[in-house]
Amino acid sequence: MKRLKTPRIGETYEILLSTYDSDHSPNAAPMGIRFLSYERIRIRLFKGSRTLQNILARRCAVANLTNDAILFYGLTFKGPDLNSNLFTKARLVNAPMLKSADGHIEMELVKTTQHKDVVLAELRIKRSHLRHVVPPFYSRAAHALVESTIHATRIHEFLVHKQKRKAVKLIHIINHYKEIIGRVSPDSDHERAIKDLQTRINRWKRSQSIC
Ligand SMILES: Cc1cc2nc3c(=O)[nH]c(=O)nc-3n(C[C@H](O)[C@H](O)[C@H](O)COP(=O)(O)O)c2cc1C
Image (tube, rainbow, N blue to C red; front, side):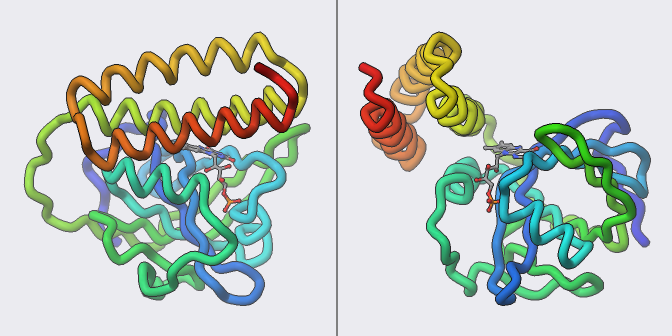
C-alpha cells in the first residue's frame, strides 16, 4: 500500500465519504476524518445518516479528497437519488468512489464505539491513490461556503430542538460569510450556493414559526 505523506496524524480533514445504499445505489456525504496513524482513520458519524447505516451494513467506505466546495454543498443537501454516473466502483472495497475526486482512500471498518448521538468508527486504509493536481488558487469563497454548509447542518438541528439563540448566532456567521463570498467571488457558483443555503434556512425558520 502506498503511504500517504500529506496528512498529519491527529488532524481532522473534511472529505466526501462514499458508500453503497442497501439497494446498491451510490451515496456520498461530507464527513470529517481524523488520522490515528498512517493506516487508521476515525470518523464521528452522527446517528440518523445514510452513511452510518451503510458503513455498518457493508463495513467499508471510500474517502474522496477534493477542494470542490460546490460538491460539499450539493452532497450535504441532496435528494434521495444521486447521479450514479458521478461514481465508479472502488478497486478493493465494496463501495463507490467519486470520479471527479483528486484522491481516494479505500477503507474497511475495524471497530465501532456507540455514544449517545454518535458512533465512532475506526477504519483501516486498504488502498490510497492521489492524483497529481495543478496547484490550486486559494480562494476565501470555497472555504466560506464549506464553513457555512457545516453551520447550516447545525442550524437545522437547533431549530428542530427549539434552540433559537444558538441557531441565530450561526445564522449571523453565515451572513458574514455571504458578504465575503459576494466580495471575493461575485456572480459565481459559490455565491449562488450560499444564496440557496439562506433560502433553505429561511424555509426551516418558517416551518418552525421563527422570524
Ligand atoms: C464539511 C462538513 C463536514 C461534516 N462532517 C460530518 C461528520 O464528521 N460526521 C457526520 O455525521 N456528519 C457530518 N456532516 C454532516 C453530513 O454530511 C450531513 O448530515 C449529510 O446530509 C449526511 O448525508 P447522508 O444521510 O447521505 O449520510 C458534515 C457536513 C459538512 C458540510
